[in-house]
Amino acid sequence: MSLIIILSCIIALIILITWAKFNPFLAFLIVSLLAGWLLGIPLDSLTKSVKKGIGDMLGELFIIIGIGAMFGKLVAESGAAQRISKVLINLSGEKHIRWAMMLTGFVVGIPLFYNVGFVLLIPLVFSVVYQTKLPALYVGIPLIASLSVTHGFLPPHPSPTALVAQFHADLGSTLLYGIMIAIPAVIIAGPLFSNTLKKIKSTPLHTFQVKEKPEDKLPGTTNSLLTSLLPVLLLAMSTLLPLMKTDDKTFGQIIIFIGDPVIVMLLSLMIATFTLGTGTGKSIKEIMEFYGESIKDVSLIFLVVAGAGALKQILIDSGVSGEIGEMLKSWSVHPLFLGWIIAATIRVCIGSATVAGLTAAGILAPVITTLNVNPNLMVLSVGAGSLMFSHVNDSGFWLFKEYFNLSIKDTIRSWSLMETIVSVAGLIGVMILNIFI
Image 1: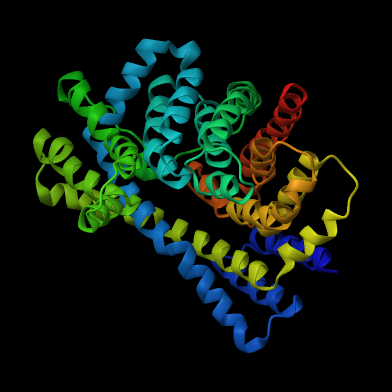
Image 2: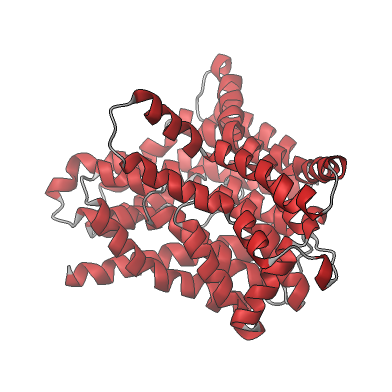
């Protein structure tokens, strides 16, 4: 019954947005309240779940998307994105630019959370699109696929790291196996799949539409690269600092503070304000006007992501994810496939990859020792399942849709299918590795 309710609510959400032309945020609120009532959440707790979902989703994302939009706007307006895209095109050639984008996404995606990497690299994607006149999805999907794979498969990202702990796996072995599976998954879902997306039209948000500057007006290559990659470098450093053993509590607190993605983004923006802003002849007033314009352009994204958070929280508070998992646990299938199918089903129903992975782990962890399966591969199987078919109940779906300015149909055709390919390729890779390990 719960599955029927969830499916009906998702269909209602799609109809409200596409046919009835409702604002996505309003559609999410209506469907979230309806889903909560039908799934048995008490009326006096229903709005609390909606508020919690919105607050939890926007708590960190609001700052990251906001600062990321400002950072991206400055990178685009200063000419740094144009400079970097020229370097990439010169190094790889237009023919191989998608492979260069895939490699960029993979390297950046290992230390960065998905949302941070997404908002940081979007200006680069659109700058390359402007320089080469190639379709946006054709260029962007290889990079986005890399970010998605590292998010779902590789520590130190939250879900795989938590799964390693719950399944008592080895972090180093999981990372090694994860890279072995991630590389073919990214190639299939990135450069190969993007060949099918050439005819889909995508007009980037105005904030990231690049206005070509004369060569002598562009910032230097070193300045452009170092400033644009500064958040990546700072976050990479912050993951290494905790390895330094110290009994000084104050030093430990400082490390945690400066390693927080919000602080990293804010610090990077402040430095960029001078290196790409005043350092290139712009006034503080002009730079602040750029920042103000960037927030206007992403304001709808805030609302849509908030709405997705409300629906996700309703589905979590109703307990439906655990109910689905327990129902699937009784299936007589290979343990690795079972882990994948539990995570995949919860992902499709709930929307959140992290919730899907952790819920599946909570169901399987108590019996992992009796399943006679490699725990490192179980981490990767569940991680792959948690990426399955992202659609309208996932904030990542709307983030992708709004930034690339696509219809729901084209977002499903590109983003949702890409995520499905990554998930299935990951499962196949796990099953192949299981033969030899």
